[in-house]
Length: 358
Image (tube, rainbow, N blue to C red; front, top):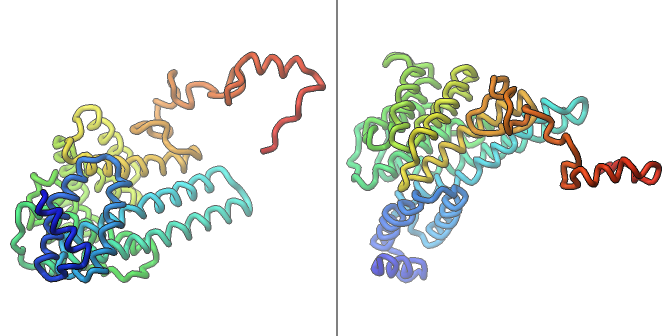
């Protein structure tokens, strides 16, 4: 560890900018920084790592010789923009549900434009990761390259970048120019890494690509997606399920989406998160929770009260802590005044202050 830190210091100081230094950065990024980061549930920290790595490597002139690090850095940096996309989507859904007239039009348009801009920025970062993957391993989807066991995650993240880069670019208006052919390359590239070892995510990527391309020569891609998602849950890393959720939402297959979301919730109750891959499982939860929030925002004008509860389901009407069990503001001041404050206001007659117009 001391030796690795020493080499990082040399590189950061600009004392050794050759290929050897770049390769040290590559291995430390893959084997230490990202590998250790996968044990943290805080996705914001993971995206910050990507932001922190990319520009210094480019500035020191070692990016082209530290391509694996570039794949991981750009994927991590792209994760920073996904919450921006999500917030804009939720804002737009809520505006459609609760506003009217000019306010509704303005709010929906503003949310859409924010979403498109974030999609485009994310697509650019994902494309940088995909380009670095191909620069390191050659054209993806042709003959499988030699991939070290320790680098299977790098390859998986590169495939993720290709799939998500295309989807984000399409949603943002196609300004980045990620080729639609990338989906086929991703699907074929999944054969180069271990599906079971990687929580059935490669198989989910392949099925997602074929479902998006409406390609059925290898069977029903939607059935393949469900099979991979179900198989992956037992590992404690539910990323394959999240891929299914994302693709179902993208295709407006709402009934299947609702089933997948509830399957994800059941899995969380039955199978604990794999500790060394907590970031992966947390990211999967973030993806699925967002799609659940979108369903709730469209139906009720707010996010989901809990993960797994569907809008319009029987769980809304029962007793308990849900927002539909009873009026959450009944019985007094919802901001802490309680019965005493309410009684005082009722007894004050004409001296009571007017209702706030905040």
